[in-house]
Image (cartoon, helix red, strand yellow):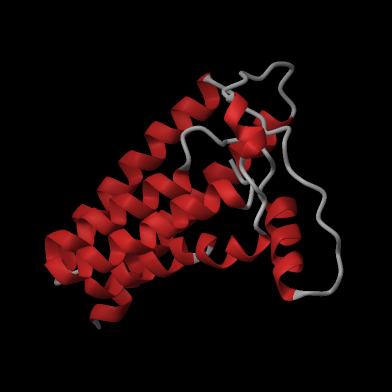
Length: 173
């Protein structure tokens, strides 16, 4: 029953993660003030909707970690690292609220790409942006997977880099 034991580690972590992230997002969406961490260069970064697909690789990276962990103690250790990252990010989100004001207009033209961008813009309010949990989670998972297997770590770092680039170019941060 290793599958269910692994699931018993993953499901509570995901519930805590998503519940806290979206709950804090709703709280931060209604703040009276936000910190501006934008740079002049931000307006020069192009919007490339097709990079919504690499943006989704964070899900694949977590799935890879779930499967690649050699045993339950390794998975529990990874879950603790992910929880620590999440708690640090949540504390920063609460103490330093940031809101994006630079999301582009996306036309609902029926294309899968634009519909995915619109879905994530709807789902993920333009708050809880700094630090980027997508980037942090991706690289943390890549580092952990690299501790299990060198080649897997290289592959995961490449995927994490794709996630980091996509976060900027789909204007999620």
